[in-house]
Structures are given as C-alpha cells and as structure tokens.
Length: 74
Image (cartoon, rainbow, N blue to C red; front, top):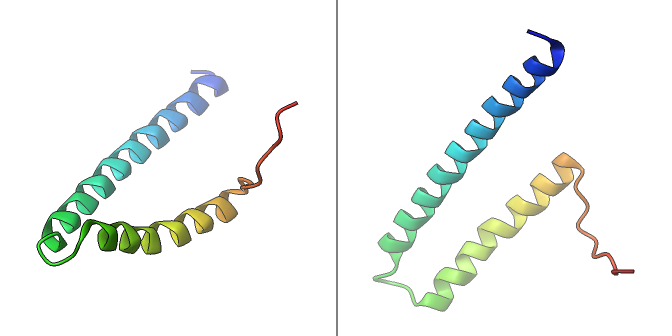
C-alpha cells in the first residue's frame, strides 16, 4: 500500500463519518420538529431552527477556515 492509498482510506473513513453524522443530525432535527409542531407555528419553528443553525455554521466556517465572503463573478 502506497502513501496515496493510505490518504484515500483516511478520506473515505472521514466521508463515511460525515455522512453518518449528517443523517443522525437530520433525523434528530426531524424528531424535534415533530415534537414541537403541536405547540408552535411553522414560522416559530423556522426561527428557532435558525437560532441554532447559524451560530453552528459560523463556528464551523471559522474552525475550518472557510470564508463566508461573497465573490463577484468576473
């Protein structure tokens, strides 16, 4: 096994982990929406979801170094 093969294996495992975490997160979010939908309106659910999602996305973008600036197409 060469070094390139080892890097692919690590990336494959990372990809599998990311997919699993994404699916678990979506299932959890779906369960929470179903739980609170009897008491809240759709707009309240959207607002609450944004209150949680936006700080998480900002934190992830800063942790990974991904910029959030818009780029003008040339």
